[in-house]
Image 1 (tube, rainbow, N blue to C red):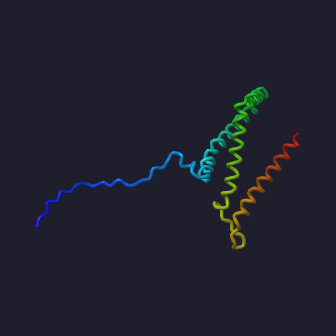
Image 2 (image 1 turned 180 degrees about the vertical axis):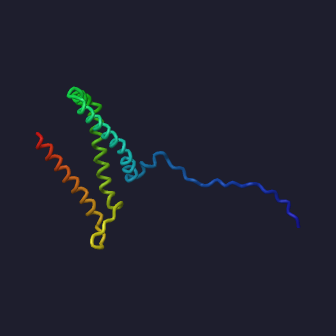
Image 3 (image 1 turned 90 degrees about the vertical axis):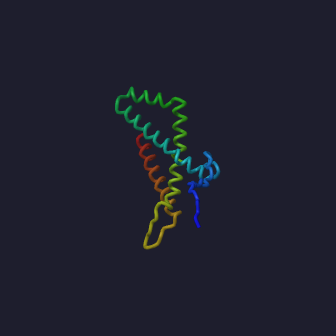
Length: 139
């Protein structure tokens, strides 16, 4: 018995569900994830802003005054306030994520995640108090 079958290549098309460009709007946790990722742009802006401040202070009093005048611009004020909000979001989400990223054992037992997060917030408050104290002593 002879078969005269002709081979034809078959290339299946894999079923892939189409993902919307706005997938991150579907759940609050996804939206928060995207906002946290976006916050890195504002963190970079603050670093650049502080470097420009240091450069202005190191040049002369006139350059520093020009920097202050530039910083009083409503656009710059808005950008810096928005940056502050994004940096606070970045810090809070990072402190809440720390218990999943860091496992701490004391005496052979694992510390609860809430204790790790609380210690991060306590450290933030302590450093903030020290900086505030240094600023108040200067004035």
